[in-house]
Structures are given as C-alpha cells and as structure tokens.
Image (cartoon, rainbow, N blue to C red; front, side, top):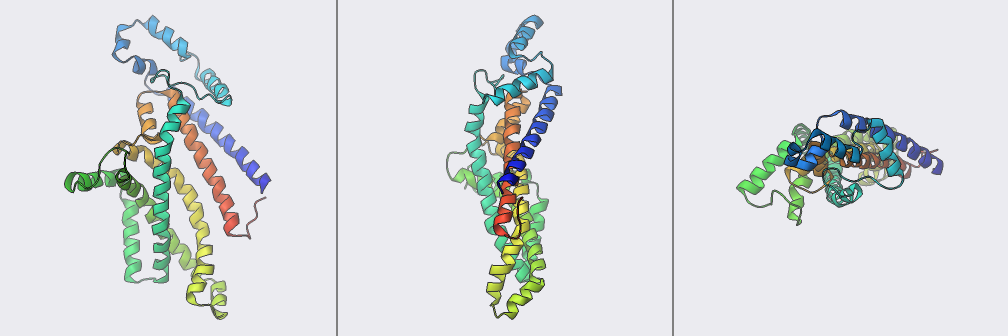
Length: 310
C-alpha cells in the first residue's frame, strides 16, 4: 500500500509539473500586460523606457522559460511569488484567504449531492419502472441538461428579486450558502442518481444476490449488505472524477454570487494578467484533483477488500 501511494504521488507531481509548464506558456502567450494593469491610467503617462525598466524589475522581459524556472526555484523554497497587479501581496496569502470559501462550497455541494442522489438512485432501482423511478430519471435528465450559470441566474431572479428570501451576493451568513451550494449540487445529484440506479440494477441481477436470498436473508438485508456496497464502487470513482468539475464550476458560480473564493480570484487574475496568481491557483487546483484521485483509489481498497493496491 505504501509503495502504491508513493508511486501515485510521484505520478501526480509529474502531472502537476506538466500542467504548470503548459499554463505558464499559455499565460505568457496571451494578451495583456500586468504592468499596465498595475499602473492603471498612470501607464499612459509613462514613456516606453520607464515601462521597460519596471518590467525588467519584475523579470517580465525575460524569456518565458527563464521566468518559469525562476518561479519553480522560488516555489521549491516555499515562495509562490508576489502579485504584480496587487503590489506587495504574497500569492500564498491570497490563495489561503480565498481557499476557505471555495472548500466550503465544494464540500457542502458534494455532501448534499451524495446524501440525496445515492438513496434516490437506490430506491429508483428497487422500484424499477414505478412512478417514483420515472420521476427520479426525469429530474436527473433535467439536472444534467440545465447549465449551472443559468440556474444560478434564475435562482437570483426568483429567490432574491421576486420573493426576497435569500441574498444574491456575499458570504457573511448561512443564507449566503444556500443558492450557490444548491446550484453546484444539482448537476452532481443528477449524474450520481442515474449512475446509482444503473449500478444497483446491475448488482441486483447478479447470481450472488440470488444466493443471498436463498440463504433466507430478508430483502432489506440483501440490499443493504450486498447490493449497496458493491454498487458504491463506481460511485466512488465518479465522485473523485466529478470533484474536478465542481472546482471548475466554482469559477463561474463564485463570480455570479460575488463569493471571495479561488474561482472569483482566478477570473479576476486572468482578466488582469496577474501571472503569478493565475499560476498559483492552477497549481492548487491541480494538486487537489491529483490528491482526490489517489484518495479515490484508497477508498476502493477499503470498501472492496478483494482489491489490492500494490
């Protein structure tokens, strides 16, 4: 097990390295000048020589690969750099302050999705072709089809503009969590419910299920002890996979609801060409996805002892 974890961590670090190189190259090749963003209107009053001198100070006139290896060397010492646009602010501090709202949103959305989708899909499989099954599948199809940003805007129109029940922006009270968490959870609920129903139907038709019934176990015991546990294996895989989509969806949702998280910070940094911050956020997102994949494999071995990680 330890050798497997070490090997996966090394693979993960290689993936992070490749993503960081590609991201750095794309940022450098894109339009925009962080120095002009930093100076604002004052940049128009400066000569080209003055602007070049400031760029030299920040190392922005160096080739992109020299800038990358300089950033990588600082990162190896625990220094993620300083924001060019927000002069004087360390990138690590900015990421730390913005990470907590993003983590809260993603964890809450995932918990809501799992707690509703798994039992819904399970009962839909047990009551196959019933009205309950049909309702769950229709709802799941709608949840997959509806774009999250459109759902977020409709929620704001209904619950803020029309009913006045919930605040549209901010992150100050528990009421601010309701709409963004539900919006993020809707698509995940739909996907997990459909998958849980499909895997449960497949498991319920296996020979070992009939053997369990032949031993005299009640239908409830057969479902809980055997069917659910085996049906959860694909669910765990998809949960680890969908966590990456939750992180990417947070970028738009945080912007719509004005939540001061990593997603909103990422969007602001991209529009302002704040290279150091963008690189730091991409690095953080990539590390989270890699760690989620490793955790998924470990949970696989815990739930199904037949699986051995070597």
